[in-house]
Length: 313
Image (cartoon, rainbow, N blue to C red):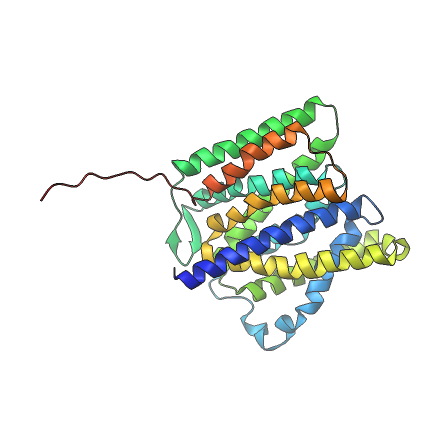
């Protein structure tokens, strides 16, 4: 990997973290004010599908599916990063605060990515290289993530709140996103082709749902709320967010790209406290203290150095 590719990948991962946190905050605000999951999903996938339509119908139409990509891989690409993923997140945002979204989704992503890579036979699919063995610092990081989320979830159950329903949906969404990351690393599509493919198919899958359930709140919500969600869901998250994350996966591999998740819980928690007055409780701080370092260690960015003695000449 060249320094230029590494720098590009790191910048893309940072941008993905910022976009991911912003999307979580905007989604939580939307489903708790004037709009619902169906309306947000329509903007989340419909707007970027229209913006990327030239990749479906233009010159790139014949190359949007790489020959090496199987139908199962392409299906995982859409299921993990498209409509099913989005509906799980938006439904969960109705039940649990934004801080829960950051901890359970972003925190569990490296855990599910590592498990998925092992199930694929130890391959991340990044240009044919084998995935790194889970051990040492990575294993310690995954343990910190699991412990942090377990303690946080136990607190939610003991408090008698209904947050756990959203937490379970966030975990399921993170599992799908991990599958999406691994599928993209193997599919052979460019980031723009991948974004067009995911959003295009998601928009098509959404049409029958909208025909049955409708999106009535789009007609009654204030224009300011609709404009905010159209920009946040359709342009920032649906278009830019998907592309920059795919660039990070293409340059760094699925496991290293998931390092961007380390920033998301902190950014989302602080943003929710500032924008929506969500309390930063001791349980949240404890979870962050375990999950954030766990994500860093699980990504493989930190490695234990072992000195190998050399024989004297």
